[in-house]
Image (cartoon, rainbow, N blue to C red):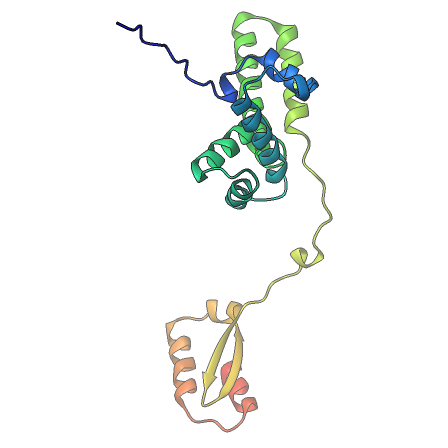
Amino acid sequence: MSIPQKYEARKSLAEQRHELILAHILDPDNSPLPVDAQEQFNRVISASQMLDSYHPSSVIPRLQAKYNVARNTARKDIRLAQELFKSKHEFDWDYWQQWQIKDLVDTIRTCKLQGKQKERIAAQKVLKDVIGEKTIGSEDPKRMEKSVYYIQLNNNNNIVNIPLDKIKGLNQSEIRTIVEVMNATVDTEDQIIEMLNT
């Protein structure tokens, strides 16, 4: 009767001890990492460098071609690279700033309830720095100009622009007169303007 052998499951790179990975980085020729973990380490480093220039969907085929791995393996390596190397491709500035503001507000509230004035004032100063001051940009000169809106009327290929301010001040009978004038046949644009002004 033979004793069954126990096989240890291979540990992925994420499950390896920090000291082993550091030793591999410092001396790759005498690496204590298992061979499959060394290969995954190289793929993850390569994926993180590619993610700085390419979208993850473009990195997958590049990893497959370079290391001859399956699509799922490439996806796992990219996910690990995004988790470990949060640089240009993953850092969410707005989320970080909102988290920091919320944390400072909670700290201020706690300090106020506990009567810690010094800590509360210090947290308020930091909060002011995190929020920052409103940026003073150059004023748009057109923003201060009065905007005039026109209603464009087209009658027998005669186009007339009527300012909206003039129509707003009219009552029902005057608007009816405008509609009647529009339906009348007129030869020139001057006649139309003259009718509308009366």
